[in-house]
Image (tube, rainbow, N blue to C red; front, side, top):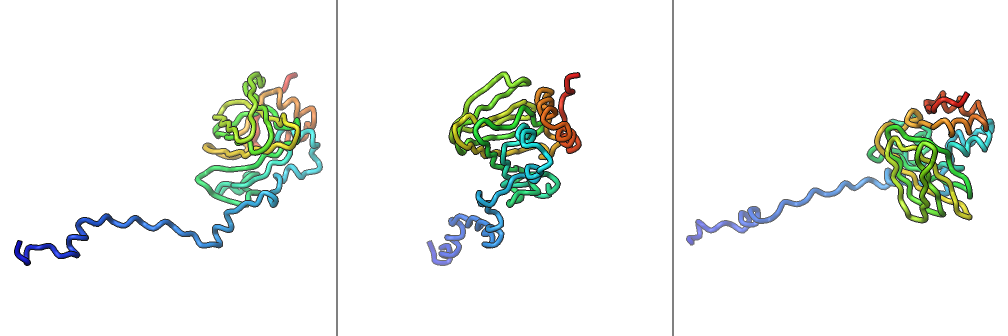
Length: 211
C-alpha cells in the first residue's frame, strides 16, 4: 500500500477504541454526611412522646419505639418524614420498629403501599387476615413483604427486645393509607376513646365499632 493510502495511527485508534464511559457522580462530602442516620441518635415519633395518650393505647397502634430513618422529599407533613434524618430515596420511607417482648401493633391494612419487614433482632410473629387468622414466625434476617390491602399485625415473641427494619414503598405515605378492622378499633377505643378519635381526625379509617 502506498504511504498516502495508509491510515494514520490517530485515525486507526479513533476508529477502533471504545468510547469512554461517563464518570460516576461524585457527591461532595457534606451532602453525604447529611445522608447518614446513626441508630443511637434516632428518636420516636412525636406522638409517642405525648404524655396525654395512655401507653396501652399507643402500643396498639405503633411499635413501642417507631424510629424514622428515611423520609420522602416533599413529604414534611407526614409523621415519618418530618422526623427522619435522611430525606429522599426514590419515594421509599424507612423506620426501625423496636418492640419489647410481647408488644406490637394491632391489625391494620395499608390501602396503597407495600410494607416490607426485615427482622434485625429477635423473633416476631406476623398475623394476617381480617381476624388475624393466619400466622407465621420470623427470626433474624427473615423478610416479609406485605402488599396493599392485606390486614396484618406483628408482635415480638422473643425473650428480649426485638427490632424490625420497615420499608414502605408505592402509593401515598400518609395517614389516609391506613385502615383498621373493627376489632382493632374497638381495642383502641377501650384503651382511649380520645386517641381513637385523634387517629380518625388524622385520616386513619376503621370499620364501624360494634353497637
